[in-house]
Length: 167
Image (tube, rainbow, N blue to C red):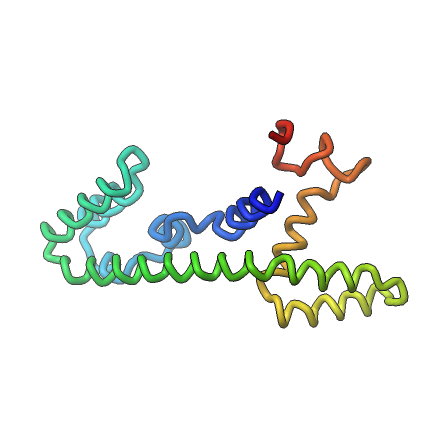
C-alpha cells in the first residue's frame, strides 16, 4: 500500500514536469540561447528536442551535434547543466514531500477529527498546517479528491484513476 501511495504521489507531483524542455516551450518560455536564433535553427532545435520517436540518449547526442553545428556548444552545455541540476533538485523535493506526507496526514486527520471546531476554524487550522507542510497538505487534499465520489466514496471501491482490481 505504501509503495502504491508513493508512486501515486510521485506521479502527481511530477506530472507535467517530466521534461522541462517541453514544459518551458509549451508555456512560451524558451531556453535563453534559443531566443536569438533564426527560424530554421529554432525549428531544428525543437524538432530534435520534441521528437518522441528517439531515445533520450539519441536526443541528447543530436542536440550536442546541433549545438556544435550552430556554434552554441557553450550555451547548450550551460543550459543542459542547469536542466540536470533542476531535475536533481526536483527529485530531492519530491522525496522530501513523500517523507513528510504521512506526518502531514496525521496532522490533517487530527484537525478533521476535532468536532468542536467550526468549518471556519477547521479551515484556519488547515491553513496553519500549510505553513509547515506547504506541498504536503495540497497533495493530501488532491489524493483525497481521487476517492471522493457519490455512493461508497469511491468508484468500484477504488480511486478515480484505477479501473482494475488490486493485484
